[in-house]
Length: 234
Image (tube, rainbow, N blue to C red; front, side, top):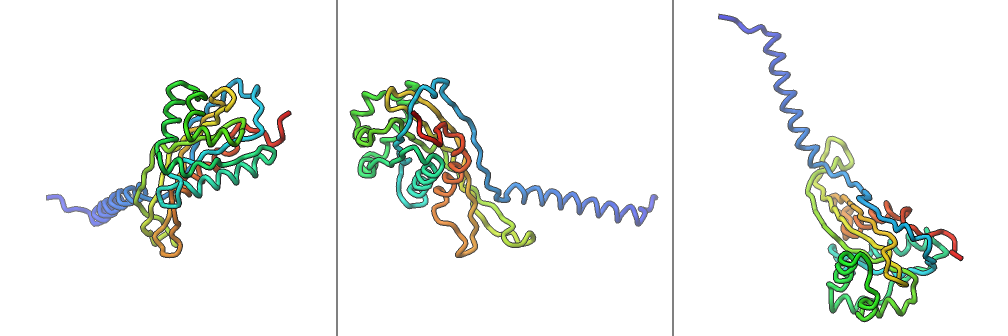
């Protein structure tokens, strides 16, 4: 009979403990909340330089409210960011709140039309209540966006101490914005973006409206890629 060496037994137990620890850490790491913001794809029309854009109408993404499913704060963040980035371009949010309240799918219908035709049918658009409101702004182009997917993931964060993981939630939002010419309906630019925001269940530190934060983070990622100039076009 072979008697196990004491050192071999210790080594075996240590190896077993190490394997179990690594497996446990791997499972924990898979659930660690680490927000990321990524530009998934961008399209820029090769003819965009032929367009004179001195004013842009920014349409809010529905629903445009202050709930944790709304985009009110993200729209305001986008508007302020655009004004700061492009001071010589005029930006306005058309008065479409009442229209979108009556028909929450109004923006989605326009987006579907753009995707189907590869351009905006201006005749159809300006005959809609949404288009009429935009037309009153007399803008050269329109920024219109839609939410493609929202995922809420439960996990952990290290919080204030690496050895004190706390419960956390990650809100992940994939969304698309289009820059459309209001002269001929051409899609001048399109970006598909992933924005994320982690918030932590630590009482007063929990953030309100995580969807707004996720979209705003994505906007911060893509703002430099919007093909407008920071000086007035002649």
